[in-house]
Amino acid sequence: MTSPGTAVHTPLLEAARSNNPDCVAALIAAGADPEAPAHSPTYMKNFPDTEQETVR
Image (tube, rainbow, N blue to C red; front, top):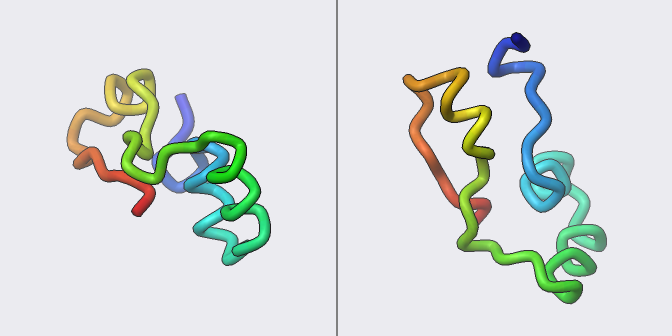
């Protein structure tokens, strides 16, 4: 199991965290939902103390 600091999240969250506005815009244009959960169900299961958030 990885630690929360090394986990890979959704492409939209990763693009936002890496300060890549062009990639964020392209993902949203392609249908990514900024209101979708940022963490996968598997991540939430492995790290139950994590609070779910949206990319926005």
